[in-house]
Amino acid sequence: MEMPRIVSKTPGKLVVLGEYAVLHGAPAMVLAVNRYCHVAINPSKDDYCHLIARTYEDQAVKFEQGMTSGFEIVDTVLRFLPGPRTYSAVLDTSELFKNGIKIGLGSSAAALTAWVGAWLAFSGKDRVEADSKSLRTLIGLHRAIQGGAGSGVDIAASLCGGVTRFQLDGCAEPQTRAVALPKGVVFTGVFTGSAAATPDYLKHYQKWRAEAPYEAAMHQRTMTEIAANGIHTADTNDGEGFLKTIIEYGKSLEMLGSQIGAEIFNQDHCNVKKIADLLGISYKVSGAGGGDMGLAFSLDVGLLEEFKRQVNKDYSVLDLDIDTNGLTVEMVE
Image (cartoon, rainbow, N blue to C red; front, top):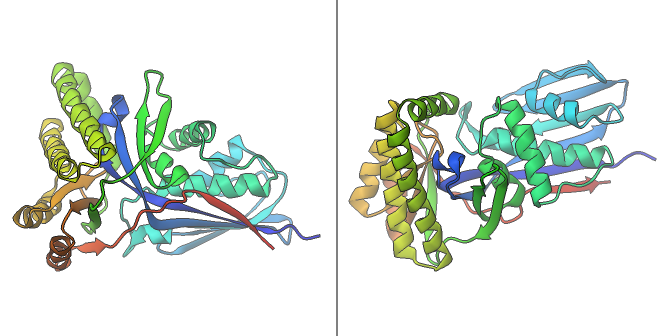
């Protein structure tokens, strides 16, 4: 009897609050959004493994079982979670690219989560659940790919879906719970058209922390307080307060950029922010900055529509919704 096809899907992410500070214990808020990574795995029809990695173009490889594919996510997972048979698979992150550029929706975290979910089901092992055990495993695998870096907030979004409060405790163990945007708050994403070099920004940040520990600790405290307050406003359904914390955290990121010598709010984000400020829209960088995505929030749907109209002249507005499912894995006969 032929084994059924395994398919999985994971959402991308947008960080709302807590960038940089989350690495050192601050709470973060992250949205899972409806741009997806898709994986499909079938048994191979010959004695080889076949893999198509789909981004803005297809890259196809064929290799013997036990050999590497050349794709780090796949090879890392199979090194730690080896499987029993050859396979034919597609790993598709094309929805997380635009014009051949990663748009900053956590493509590597989404790809890893989707691949692990599908691979374990294909191998007949335990299913990946949206629990602390699976989250720790996925974050560990993601850090192995990223040279030990990363908080795991993007993994949490892809695994759990929805809106998540994420925090690392003193032992760097992830703590998560579901939250929600305040009632009436609407949002949109803005892609600046350029990809951010996140590892370079993190290197600047860590270098600054080592060279200016007192200033770094003070700024960490400020960002932690703003992020915690923003999550509190969400918990208490305080829309106006929430919008204020978005602006405050954006300013703290802008200041952080000047301190570490890297433009977190680069010229593109500054241009978008000028439009937001004129319209009374709350806008901030989402993620490490320097390009990629920005997030705009409002309680006024009409104002947000006008913001999108103006921004779309020079940049790309992405009409995103919150994905509530996170990782899904299915067997298709």
